[in-house]
Image (cartoon, rainbow, N blue to C red; front, side, top):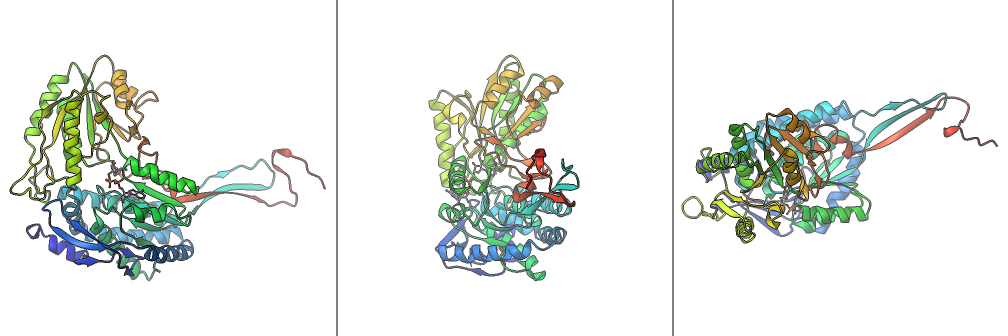
Length: 513
Ligand code: NAD
């Protein structure tokens, strides 16, 4: 770790050996049990974080609630100015934070830096948005009346995030929520608690320099039980939860029971359709990066390659050849393409998938397996694998969060490929590789991809912050980040003002006294 500057990065980010995992901004407290964060890169303990007890949580939620009353009174562009300064701090600390993401989560250093860049980008977006929280005006049917709508903040927003994007998902939510006038409480994944502490330290400096009260940015830590403190708490009008579909179903029902709102960003089972008109070189780059990038641990990772029978052997051979070039190892070393999985449980999930696909009649064509020996001591490194399979195999229908790519063959026209692509429960990301306008437009049409993201001549993974991000069906239906995703963090109010001396009723109803 020291060869890659990790101790220095931890110091720059204010990470100590033991850290308070509960915070209301500058005040860090709590003495709950410790989570020890081990790096999947080398298996070493990085540092520890205290979990949040029920009493700590109560302090956090009451502080957040009280502060919301002040924060909402600050004009939105002034809140935008705070987010601008936050973006500046992120620029200053991009390298150490990118390194910590890489070391604690296991993605490549380049992807760690990319994640921080996404945080910076969403801050820039939010700053502009802070002057554009527009509502519409409408023409009233009644004379001397004016009608318009405005957006007000919701209150306390609870954020629950997954291990695989340990910092960006928080920023996607907070940067927007803050300019909207909300305050936030974040529970990061218990697998990446130090990323949470580091981000909280960064925003705390900005809040302190601006003399702002405690409660605008809060952190809590622990497993699902700590998450449940928020999902069952009616003082939190919106829960934004990113993670597995299993988690999303539980969160949705807890939040739904109290008629709260939930924004769900759940699992994917993403496919690239390769038609007879595909550019094979582009297909290979898109598919290989999509399948092995972040060791297959992106919600948008490519899991299925649906190839036309006329291209099947050519594409298969090109992808298999490309896999031979892959270097697996320490993700902080920029010569490596593939880093470790998050933990040994994930390795088991990967091994089960490879066993299962064979049991179901599939054929492994790029052998997988766990790596051991020098450089692989953490026991989390696996070989990216490819199997030929059928779409209706149970394992193909399931999201395995690891570098396992399934090849599926289709014949006939693109509609047959679309049927396979849409024939899974998840609906996050999808792509088609084609130079045929008819196929591309069919794919994007109402009868095409049923996913929240549909790309032409681009792979399934890697989205820009300017668009709304999210997916349908078992992916949860939420949208975050760009476009008008901000509206979910606000409540809409329709206002009608009568500036006459009469009181006419809508729909011309007569009511004379
Ligand atoms: P996970 O579901 O195990 O955990 C996610 C978070 O939910 C963690 O913070 C966890 O503590 C919390 N949690 C779990 N059960 C809970 C409960 N009952 N109540 C409250 N909180 C609870 O997911 P993971 O393994 O960290 O992440 C991988 C999954 O996340 C994959 O399925 C991936 O596709 C998905 N993901 C989706 C998106 C997206 O935008 N759609 C983005 C990233 C990851």
